[in-house]
Image 1 (cartoon, rainbow, N blue to C red):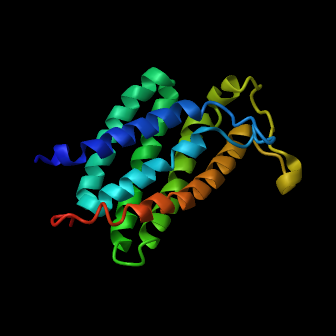
Image 2 (cartoon, rainbow, N blue to C red):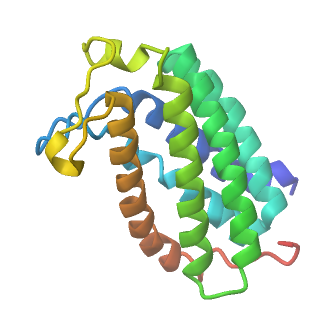
Length: 206
């Protein structure tokens, strides 16, 4: 069996998760008054870290990196078609950096407690992904987010009562996005733990 034949399900899963997230990040989560601090993409993107970590556990860091690169290429093409070029560039850059960091951190911690490697690698990757994506896609002088949400440039939409200060919409969405990524990342420990006995490290995983 070729290397790609072994990992193609992980590649397909990675591409699907990222492409879907690129579309959903353009839509606010308009429930419970969170439309100004959260998008739907925050709920789906952390699954990419689960795919990465399961690949890493099963086939090792080299295979995880191949999944990242293949998923990156497919996701960018799909994102240009499904979203916008700016979203695709931002997502691709953030995805590549964050997932490679996730793979490196996971491999470094793979010999520790079962939950430590996926949790810490996901948190580290989420920080980098959020910072890069929202800065490239939505920070001034870009107006993509304001246009998508029907707001004027420079709108200070973050509830001042929460932190005592107002901030640009894109930055408030980044905070909300990261908070949900952390929560979903914690939830992803459940399927990861459940699959430990199924996706055991292959003989050549290192």
